[in-house]
Image (cartoon, rainbow, N blue to C red; front, side):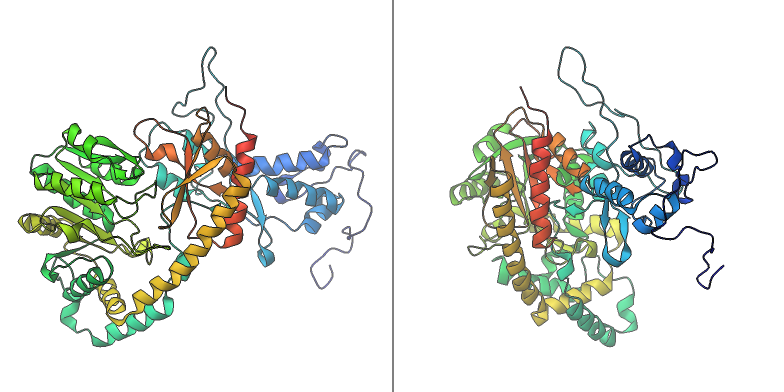
Length: 528
């Protein structure tokens, strides 16, 4: 052995590859127990690529695994380095591996399981469990992969997609997490810890820390035109918990059916369905929610995103606002999800509905699209006659949110640091939106972009009614790019499309991701 621990009899780089076909000449590698002697004559590259692809699919090479350097694996297999680099290149093109600089070549995505064959005499239909499921050895958890788009059960599909690894994530609803104001947060956290006393670490008011409720009132007055008292604010764990609390309130009031936008947020609908409510879809057009259809439907409550509708991106216009408030004055309950209302790029934000009719609107907002969803902090304002019931429900849900995060957020709001952060990310988000628009024009020329210049996502639709957007999203994920099919967020029928987030990644990833979507679209079989 030499000083590097290598056997002096081992082949060195540049030595002539051994003849694997000679008696006793078969050579292999400890890595996956590869035996080059099994490769067909003239087919070593394809054989090696297939072996690696199979190992990724069955879990022997889970996502995050670092592959051997091409030089090292070539020496072990006694093949030229070009055989290994070309096999690696093929997996990189299909999105399963990627170069990571000093980290080497890393597995980044699992391939899709085989598709179920079409049924004779009719179009293919998705069935639960279609295709063999990838086998993952314990303790590696199974990765859903593109099969998530073929599930007929919508419950949990967004979470499953979120857990699926990829190269480029164009999922909607995610802000620029790399821009999180770490310095300002640490500064505020140190100041908070230096000033709190022992009593501050006890059980507090279930409505939330008084300092945060005061700060929220100031924030809403400055940014959303809402006038409120701190005693009207209930701090919640994001809009999701706000919908859970309101759902329970509606149930106790005898309201079992809630109108929702169609298309609208799948996650928001699932929150209401989990509470036992039946959903009444109401169409959304260029003016926002169709209030005439809402009246005709007979539901006594409605959930909507008027400032920047998800996913269409339209803003509820003035006439519809007046009609909606008239409907609320007649006894209807309006739940306003102020979805990414802070992020507007060509005009001032429209006032919240709550600012126009405090006694008829339940208002929910959060910092999930402004700072980070992981903070799990939001706020809920309800009419005075419902406040006590919401506070009671919050008390029995969790006794209140974590105090330190509330105190730090209050300091960021009071100091102006949160406004400075908002101005910073607005500039970044607008540039990335422009990049995505140019990329869509180049790589998806047949797509139509919807909505105002606002928010963190774009909705695009395609003119081909025979296209299945879940197939397009699955084909993109096979190439390492995530996106939401528009049909996930629909209840009724409609044009196929995608919902694409642009805030979370840099410009070059947005460009590449949309280019991959274009390639995935072209790879789909023509529709008839």
